[in-house]
Image 1 (cartoon, rainbow, N blue to C red):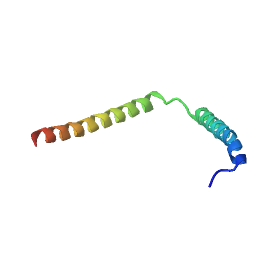
Image 2: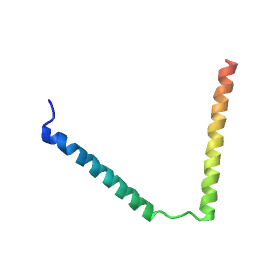
Image 3: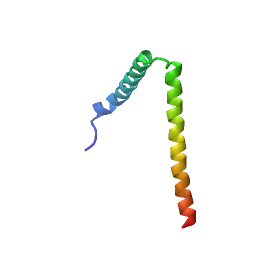
Image 4: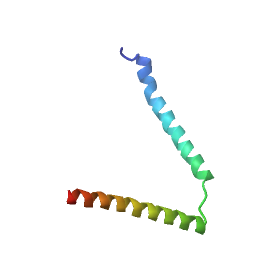
Length: 69
């Protein structure tokens, strides 16, 4: 089934509307966000660092297991 010519003409407008709605949503999200205080930032950094170390350790264990086998 081929699209109707009127459907093809509407497509650029629909894409523009989707883009405009996404930009509006991004602006709304940025308006309600706030900068974290020092304590919250430190906690986020610690949790992120611990996660990186954990994932690195798991990867290293897999690497060691694969070289020993």
